[in-house]
Length: 524
Image 1 (tube, one colour):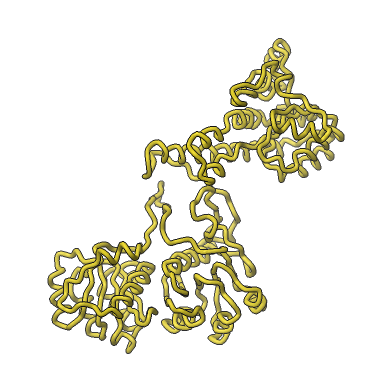
Image 2 (spheres, rainbow, N blue to C red; image 1 turned 90 degrees about the horizontal axis):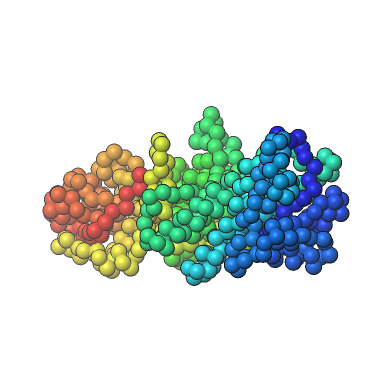
């Protein structure tokens, strides 16, 4: 291993040219480095008045095939891979006129951005970088002697270290830079494989899949204080623009592991609604859901569903949160761990500034529910599935009414709301609703009848004249009977049980309208 070799020859070839001119100038003026460069990078550096050696002057071979072949040459890779303390390597290098390259400054063609732009197949193929990853990997493999720089934000730190070490970088820095390279090229290849798989094999789950993840932060702990944890952001995600992962936190303590889980559940639930809506979640369970023409009223009625559970929970809104909403929260003296919304008005942020522990997250917008895949870990593996969402128009068109009594138009509107809200409750899930607000919910029970009892108990007198939703079919009539006897007038459920006729008969006996959706919404 060479011990902190002085950097004399630097190879630069960058797609992102941010800061590259200043970096090159400092390398030349302060450390007397020779800059070798390719194509557009060489042009930018040269036009800035900085001496640059074109790559073809090193390889003695022209760039060719529209730039596809320019750095794939022994005089490049030999100068990167040669072990400086290996006499045979150095003798072979001298024999073939290969000079050492001490630093590589490379970043890759913007393949993922090209795909995201909607570019055609051929353009995307041309933006698969070959020479860049090859140089990066060669330099990173030989980090004992070569510094490899992939991130423009690290230029200043590299220069500072060279100033402190007589023009050299330290072994620890080179090792860290090499690790960053292999992580980057791994994610890059994974993105290419994922895209090409969909192009050649169509949609579906690939036989092999690479997940690109970037750590956003270490968390104080996991679900419990004795568990360490971190939060990673998916590098490629269709709904990234308005996702929780990329939300702006305006204030409050750092998010915890449990905060992320609860806020994710609330945000996924509130995105189901087109009208102004509020969802309050505690321990991954919605304890209040309301859709209303007015966001303040949506909050108030969601809070009324279960004020006890709402205390210390998280809230999600699908509209900008203004001062009027904050005033309503303060009037209820409600302690809130987190609030997520598309935006907060300046007045709302100013009012909440005194509540220093409350976390306010702005996503910048609302993505439609569904449309992506979800990952869940099990021991030794990952479960992958399409995300679940209520496709309202398509869903309702397929609904059937097996009972003698048809739901009224008002009941049908309530059933649509209840069906959406029920999807967010842990199975076995029962949700009672009236006036587009949940009034009782039972979920996470081993049997459906207990979920019905919990929902009825929570709803109390509000169950009379309300509607109910069940995320899956009633295996027996007992769960349905609990709802009907509490005064529920209409129920929506998937149907499909071998005892459907028994449940339908129970509904007819009690004059309750029942709708079959034909599919369920389990949430385990």
